[in-house]
Image 1 (cartoon, rainbow, N blue to C red):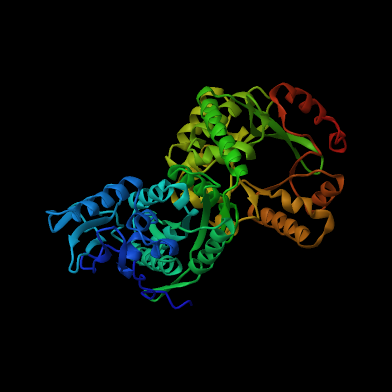
Image 2 (cartoon, one colour; image 1 turned 60 degrees about the vertical axis):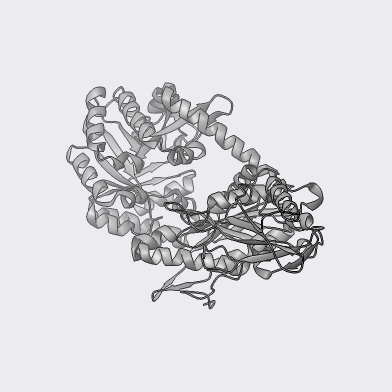
Amino acid sequence: MDGMADGDGAPKPGGQEPDTQAAEGLLSFDAELNVGLVSGRAVALLGLPRSGRHARGLHDVLEASPRLDRDAVAALVAQCLAATLPGAEDEFALHLPGAPGLRFSVRRASGGSWVIALAAETRLAGGTGGFDPLTGLADRAMFEARLAAALDRPPRRRAGSAVLLCDLEGIRAVNNVLGHAIGEDLLRAAGRRLQAAVRDADLVARMAGEEFAVLQTEVADGDHAAALGRRLVELLGRPYLISGETVVVTPRIGIAVAPTDGMGAAELLRRAAMARNETCAEGAGGFRRFSPEMDRRWQERRAMEVALRRAVAENAFELHFQPQVALPEGRLTGFEALIRWRHPDRGMLAPPVFLPVAEQLGLMQGIGSWVLREACRIAAGWPAPLTVAVNIAPAQLEEGRLPEEVAAALADSGLPADRLELEVTETVLLANADSALSQLLAIRASGVGIAMDDFGTGYSSLTQLRVFPFDQLKIDRSFVQDLPAGGDAAAIVRAVTGLGRSLGMAVIAEGVETEEQLDRLRAEGCDVAQGYLFGRAVPVSQIPDVIRALSRPDAAALPEAV
């Protein structure tokens, strides 16, 4: 444990909690606008870097603050100058839109001097006053305003700045398992760790949900920001002790540095988010600095999204079909339907290229329904009893209407129910739990076959077999590829085929590419095989040729037949 869990690590002086009783920061000046005293509270509230703390002129001090834009500096200096004129009032209160979260007053002091008194704004009724009510950190509005102010300073006063966007993966799971109260305490603890890790001149904000941000000032180069990112990943990834529960989250941080990575606030935030998103492919937490290559990939992704939405609207997909053969004789039993997208610029695309994007865009319900209808329509023209296997996505089970969709697809196409098989992965079952089980049971009762795809790769495949009577188990291709080497892969294939026999389920092996793999599968008693050895997935126009080739007596010995 790191000593800051469950209440340790209170915010440092100058933190952003909206304490209405906090002492004012004081900055004194004379009639020539030369600076005298600058209190520590004023240094923290203004976020003054080292260079600004030692400036002699009032304008230079205020201009060094990343929390004041040019208009705020000009207005405050003008008001201070007016205060020194004969006949001026003893105190002025100022509201400066270019200084979010701060309130100012200028007043006469003793001995021919004046002071600027500044403090954090109090919360307004019904609002947050620039602060996050849960953690006491700055909120998104204040962060964006102060980032814009830091970037707005004149070039001669503009030290480098960096934006570090941090997402804490795992907080939602904490909310679901341990409750929202624990989740809120965890967010507060993470905020305290962030605040303790940065300097007074830096700004920490909670942007939304489990997303935090740091505005790092006086950044000499990208290595400076990377050092902070590395420190934050290590610090935030340590276990937390919350109300007696030990909790661990995964920090993912994206970094964008001005001026190298951009000079606009929105641009820096967007590019920091790009960098953060690139850490999602990594298992453990980490940080990434923005690079131009990320922007190129983002542009490609955006173009992919636009084209994919259009393709869904226009049903601009096609199905290819890969043969499945019975063992040991090699007789053709049917085909698996596999979607393809003929992209207008990139040509024919396989499912792994675009289906993950479709899932993130929420398009899989429509795509899956089209695949089901089209596969049934095409298979109805094949000679009986050839079957068609269709993969089912989690989204197709979310609305609870899959049994009706299957029934409609069969009725519209005229395909008998026993010639359709639906393939589901463990992910599909786990994502929808009881709803998925009830829908699949209803579909199976209508005569449609159900297969578990990628069997052996999940965490609870055996548990699923206890609650659902599958017709087929489909051995994942990774085990088939390693069969010739023996060892664990051979043992797993042997165990699955034995399990299938004992439960009355056929076993199909996918990814069969060599005669040696086929011989081992036959020896283990595998029922059905699928893979390049028997043919790649082909368009509808080539299916008659495949049927003829794999209907010959020696079809299983003809890997080049199709």
